[in-house]
Length: 61
Length: 198
Image (cartoon, rainbow over all chains, first blue to last red; front, side):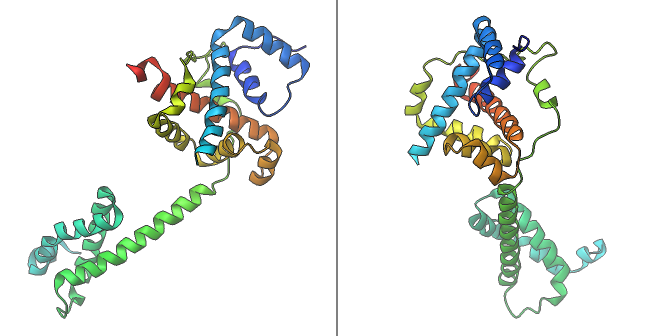
């Protein structure tokens, strides 16, 4: 179990979660943070959007 | 070039009188007005230095154009080399987390918090969105742009990217984190944000 994370840490974990599996402690800390923080939930949605837009760009040619 | 010589030799004024023609010629070649002015300036300086060698066998305009053509080709070659160099610039990672300090305050909070983007998928149907998206991608430093492109556009695995780029996985994660933060800020400013919509 890692300590609580702030937005800076949460943004790092949200980005890395797209490359690697977070460990249980990281996941728990991230979930606790996201429960409280709508800004980081918006950030997570934006990362997902960036991925969808990028994939879409590839298929647009 | 000694200043008094400029006043003495009537050919200097003659050279200068061809400038507008030469600028039009260079602009047509380079499709860039500022670069054209620059390259014409270089050509005219070279002509002034070489004016003693101008034998008058060809017209002065032909002579000046041949100097300019040489300068244009030289510039094009330099530009291509610069572009290639940038394309292969290694994906560098700054030491430490200082770059994050610009985005988060001392307590780790967003300085410029993300906003909720209304109906983002609708943007996919708009040509201007793709222009904005590509412009934001282009603003990333070349190495970071390449890593982001491989990961998100081509969908390559991180370990493949690391091997190709010669960087460690953790450097790769830092680059992607940084690129994503920059892209979301750029899109929010240029497309989704309240300011962009106003």
